[in-house]
Length: 256
Ligand SMILES: [Fe+2]
Picture 1 (tube, rainbow, N blue to C red):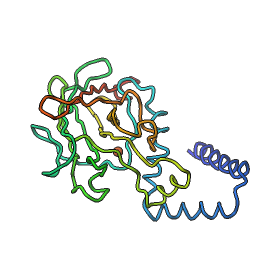
Picture 2 (picture 1 turned 90 degrees about the vertical axis):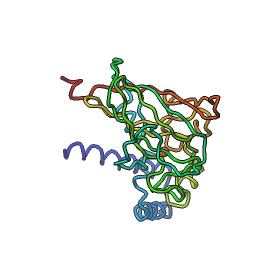
Picture 3 (picture 1 turned 45 degrees about the vertical axis):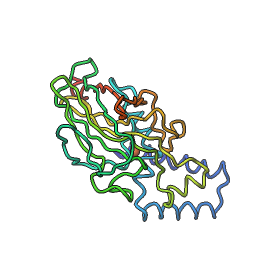
């Protein structure tokens, strides 16, 4: 699609040129920016930069008006092939995993309310200190990552701990950019999910803990009011939270 590429790349460059002119960007600033581009590449942070500062607009543009539950960004910390969990459906964790133990449950339906049996929920999250396994020091590989399936009535349940908020890496070029701009580097506490079922659009989303700090200043701009959840304290000292997911029919089906 040379016309599409010409339009998009040309427009991006035109807007960059306008910023340079309007803000009288100096050679020193240009050289600093050029070195920063190099540093982001060498640090392997382009996926981080894209997912934190760009993806939310793509997601809203692509799926904001879709039927069913709201999605939000995938982010850079998903790993494929998390284990399918057996009862009691507890996400893999350390024996001394800190954080409030929480029972998450709900239902997966189509946008019309049809219960979806055998829908898959791929779940991943940070630990109570805000660390993702395989990406940050602390948790072992596979920690707090797993998949569960719905039963014949579309119901699902899993057990986890309430995650902590976290910052994007502060010592890399993306973190240095946010510091230079005076922006908050924090993401509020959230649980990531991809909910999928045969014949439906996969839903990439996050559930945000409603008592978390940084809900109004998410560095990734991914919070939506429909995605706030309220963990309730049970009599046994553990928490529970509920969320129902409604999936849009797969696009090929929707068009047919
Ligand atoms: Fe996250």
